[in-house]
Length: 144
Image 1 (cartoon, helix red, strand yellow):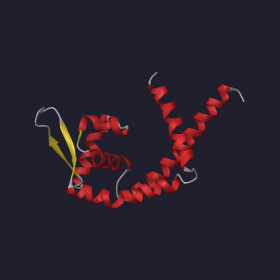
Image 2 (image 1 turned 45 degrees about the vertical axis):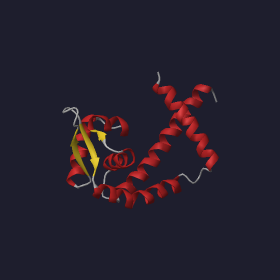
Image 3 (image 1 turned 90 degrees about the horizontal axis):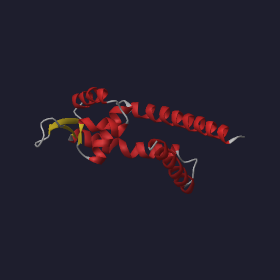
Image 4 (image 1 turned 90 degrees about the vertical axis):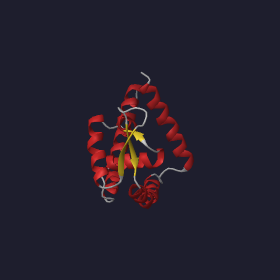
């Protein structure tokens, strides 16, 4: 196999693995009554604290136009609220509500365990190697 063919095969294997993982995890997230994007925003706010609306999209890989829609949905469910920045009127933060915290605290441990089960084909050393190699690849590509 040529190195060029090997690179193509790696691309295909990574793409298929990513699709398979996302499909099964997204189905699980939907059982929580949220779509994957809503879950990602809520999880971000829970683990990282208040976030400017303008920056959420970049942190969860979502187009900025979709953030307003997702935040509106989470706000209507009572899971977050918008908070004006006291220093800059142009900035609005998303803040997780008490109901949002309670929701994430209820579902996240099971979600984490579910992902752990999905990744159990690899042992700890293999996971660390995969993390290191995939991160190296992603960083080299994003720096182009």
